[in-house]
Image 1 (tube, rainbow, N blue to C red):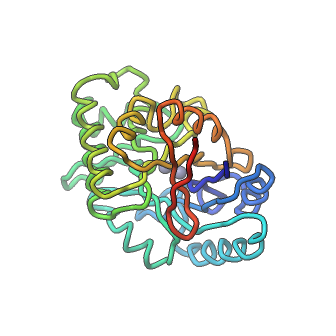
Image 2 (tube, rainbow, N blue to C red; image 1 turned 30 degrees about the vertical axis):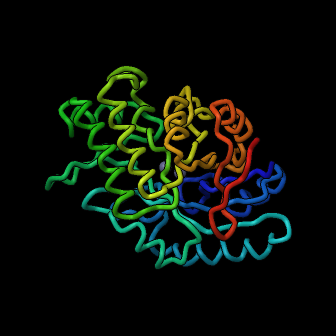
Image 3 (cartoon, rainbow, N blue to C red; image 1 turned 90 degrees about the horizontal axis):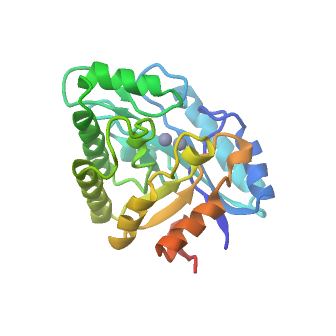
Length: 281
Ligand SMILES: [Zn+2]
Ligand SMILES: [Zn+2]
């Protein structure tokens, strides 16, 4: 089958390879479709996202590469938007303003509906930041913090209707069975209600392989248990590697296809000027 990846980063954000190095690697590894999805600007100091004054250059370079490599690979311009309650809610408006081909929305920072500007950063490589945030912002009340995470995702989908929801159960990455078990009834209920919202708006759920190849997670985001529910509810899925380096463009793509096939998934979504279904059986 044709390989693809619609979630990727580069030196324009927190990636280690340039846009062109990513493209050359994608071609070498036989990808037929590839989407650039730099972290969109966020309204606070940071080291991971595009800077406001770089947006124009990012768009120009992605369009230049699209043209330059058009005989070898189909390239698309996108961004991965952070959705943060009260702080960054207008993902779709920005995506339209930048003329993106499609866009991804993800929750990396969890915020309560209150006047506090504090955010619980649930991503990255350092579990201590997760632990500290849980303690300082949510008084170590894991149920309260995790509930906010999933409600923020639901709100994100309802307000923005992103094409793709990024790594939707990433809240579990630093948990490592310390605060909750994914089989806990309250946790499963939150996941199921979030999947229901995806279904309602026909949001594509990515199966993100990054946690596994970075050895930060035993399973993909989302894990197999939730992929089964996605299948039951007929929520469309795509496979992405969320690559930050040229050698990560297709990491575990084939394994992810095998796993979803085993679960019973028969088609995955890919982008070719519009989202289309690709049979995998
Ligand atoms: Zn992300
Ligand atoms: Zn990403």
